[in-house]
Every structure is written in structure tokens, then in C-alpha cells.
Length: 257
Image (cartoon, rainbow, N blue to C red; front, side, top):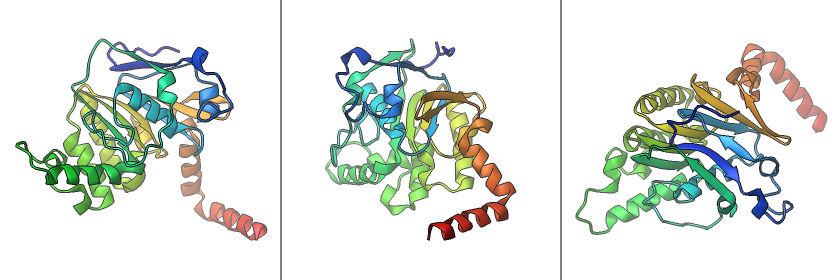
């Protein structure tokens, strides 16, 4: 299925399958990569979901690095490297771009966000004629805020619209209330001609109505609605039948013991 993505900054990725010599080596042995040919992106919001180990972060990283972002996150101006652990998948990914070019962009990676915050503090301590970098993040060191506050400061202050924003598990430090606020922020930025690609486990963040959800499975890629995702169904079942599910979970744990 081809999405109506002529207004998208990033329309599609294609895997250069003819250049891959061995699908038994990482990251090509991941089910998602074995089954990937092309993936089309919604011009507003695309979600990439699935269980742990399906390759969401690896895929997101390859997209971001292919675009020109630092593997550990940030804008395209960041070049720091705490530890080079990213895969070579980006070398085998072809980006199909739209006719528009973004004015802004950010690769948000929850697992390396601490390294990004540290780099900003280090750069701000160096002599400079320009304003401190932290001013673009709300004017306060990200390390002087709680984990959730620092995440949200980036979303609110650094994201400025007309941008391509690639987010890998942005909900990691956000409360449910903050996740709803994040959903509203996504809408504000979409209204300002932004495009999002988001890997998430959060049914709240997945709820943006004008979007596409790709579920990564051992058998390949499925297109789903929010209500069809395991994330939504399991959370709904738990909240509607809390006592029953807790009893079943605890009985299962006793059996294992």
C-alpha cells in the first residue's frame, strides 16, 4: 500500500536487498529486516510498534543515520559519540524523500538521552559567542531537571515545527498525563507542517488519529489500527479485569516456582 505522502519529508525507505550478502548475521538476521522490502511513511505520523527484540530501535537508528542524524540522538549538528554501537544497517537503507525539505529535525533516543544532555552541558562550558545551547531546551540544564521534565523540555522547547522528528520510545520517562500532553504537542507540530516517525509501546501516544501504525512481528510487518494492537488490547483487558488478570499472573508465578 502506498500512502499519500507527497507532502511528507520522508516518503519511503527501501532495503537494498541485492547488496546484503548474508542474512544470518546481525542486523540482517532480525525478522523485520529479513522481511523488509519497502516501508511507506504517513505525511503526519507513522508508528513503529511491536514486542521487544523485533528490531524497532535498529530500524529507527538506520533511518535517522541515513538522514544525517547522530546515532546517539540530537540534531544534525551533533557529532558526539559515547560508544559506537550502531549497526551498519543504514548503509543498506535507501531513503525516498519528498519534494519538501524540513527546516528542523531531531532524533530523540531515550536510551542515550543522558549522553545528549551531558554533551550539551560540556559544549555550553566551552567559550562561545553564541547563546548557550541549553537556551533552546528551555534555558535550564537537562541534568538539573527530572528525567521526565527534561524529556518534555526537549519536545516543547527544542522542536520548532516544519521538522522531521524521529522518536525512539519517547514515553520512557513520561507519566500517563505527560504522554497525553505529548500527544497534544505532536498535534501542534503536525499543524506546523511537521512529520513524525515514532517507535513506542504507549497506547496513548499511538492514538493520533491521522496516522499509520506498523506492527513488527516475527513474520514481517502488519498494518494495524490502534484497537488491533496488542498494546491496546492487553492494557484494556488489564484495566477492565484487573483482579482476574492479577490472579492469573500470580498463579502462573507460583506454578513456575
